[in-house]
Length: 492
Ligand code: GLN
Image (tube, rainbow, N blue to C red; front, side, top):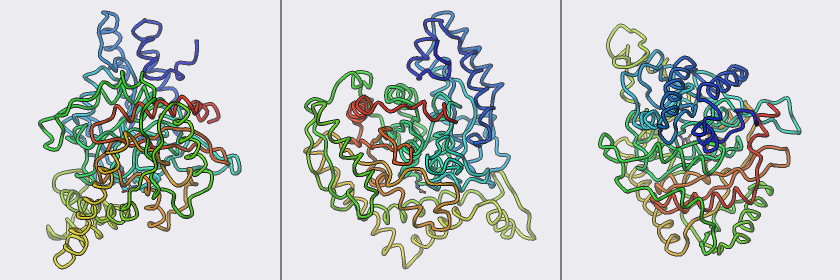
């Protein structure tokens, strides 16, 4: 039998149902691997005792022939989701010691479907970043190393870097992520796994620490597209506790997985061929186009003319919303408190010590663009441009069923690189941010390696609520590419 760590979610669920393996032995294998790879810092909090108790309960249900869609499957939760009775930090010092008395809707949906919790994964502070280097709990190491500099530790991408590194390094069978401007898709690309951001509103935001409320969306990080479909089905659903949660029923994703792409119209946006993009990424994109064409899809050249405004628009709207959301951390209600001589001084001391430099930068940008005199020039203008970006996609989706682009403009850089230059870091989101602003679903599928042996992903975007087409084209890419998702774990 293959190693317990080699199962996909779908295969492990089948092996559990057939009683070929037990949830306790599967969970133990993951707990051992978490310990063996602890140096990568993918987890902020491990919960092995909780995992084993949940696995035992799953085995009892499985023995009776019962069990939900995720029954007995050990997964990790990004430490942005509140988990009842388990430390929840958002990667920030300011939430030090915060133990939520409630469970996020997404994680509670997962537990209701039988999933087993391994622990809480590391992330950029308040999910702000593209490399998982802004966490108060230190950087996360990508299990992949490059062939040209094998001694250099590489970033896993961000902000869901701990989740991506855990899934790639076999320290979790799957994990949750959140994506505000690319934080599921870009780390999936850097770590050679599948990362899916569903349509805005698909997964409840209730109980997820808020970064930018009009953009934040939870999604699965897995090893295969089928796994992403399975896990998304367990995470999603309308939630009356989140007023932006959608009531729209989910398409039958397992049916979509079984369909090929014959007759699908796939758009290739001219504006994503950017100056200075590495040639190997351009080549991989062309390869992806060819794969889908060979599989029977019709390739259509499209234009998304406002693409170049997406990054500046995002870096106005996201900090604006963040500055408002983060106002609640004042030393009174949650986590850290640093005393002062007056109430105002206590606030200032707590926020000064509790927030790291990137978060402070975003709060300053956010309050600036929202301030009287600048609101119209920046925030209001950005909202108007956001509407134009959304309209570009609406028009494109009148003629195509899905859009294919690269996920990120680079492979995984070394820890320490790009850290002194926030703008350079922000540029990493160039291909993921437009769909976030438009609220569209997207998936990153690992399809190849860069010249220095690091994973690269391609992104499929779909219409609002059309996760079915995203999964369908994503599966076709996965089949054509035949990417070996277990390579990182074997070499690590
Ligand atoms: N890298 C982007 C940022 O820093 C996106 C982060 C995210 O999606 N959470 O804001």
